[in-house]
Length: 256
Image 1 (cartoon, rainbow, N blue to C red):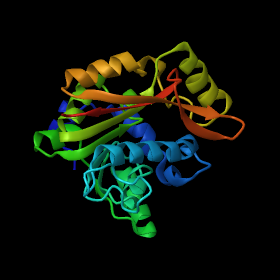
Image 2: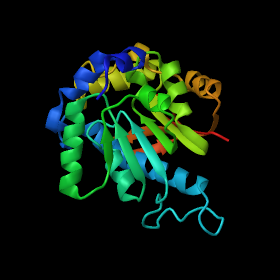
Image 3: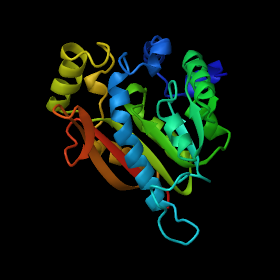
Image 4: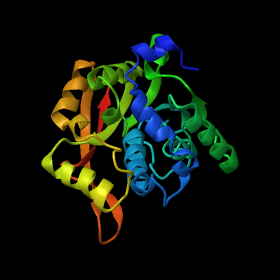
């Protein structure tokens, strides 16, 4: 359980937590308020899987076969702000030893129930990233996907997330760029026109530019190794990686 001291030190924004906690069982509905995240999830998983497989050498010393079952086996993976486990479960199916953390107890209850129903082994904990860092916990991979735009003190949050990465490990971050294009598409379009997410889900002024995020990461002692944009194709109704980072983008950094 998260105590009052943890809450004071953490980057958690209680208003943001309440908003996502209110979604309840609708987290796993592919036509519910998280439908945009469900549609984006396949491209996130492929990019994460490939980056991890290429970074962590296999028994023969070469890059892991990204199509190999259990490609992420032996890797400890932390999913910060895991919600109901939409990202945690697929990473666990790929063989990772996944720990999902979230400040909302209700989200974690839904995550545990869904994992039990689908037979996926994930460890879910109601704890903050700051508390894990204070306890000295470290992971091969730390994921903070679609989280940094919802926290207080994003630079401090990234510093904490980075501190949880083992030497030689990776930090993955995805977020929204603060551009006029993102305001038009992610706020006006996604929230008020297409209704992909509930109105008020995002606050444009809390979006983070790639330059700002790179600075946060480098100040935390990690080195950015790759970045990709993520765009939506309205014809195929699918998300894909792209050189266009004007709206959504993902970044990976290494602790050498």
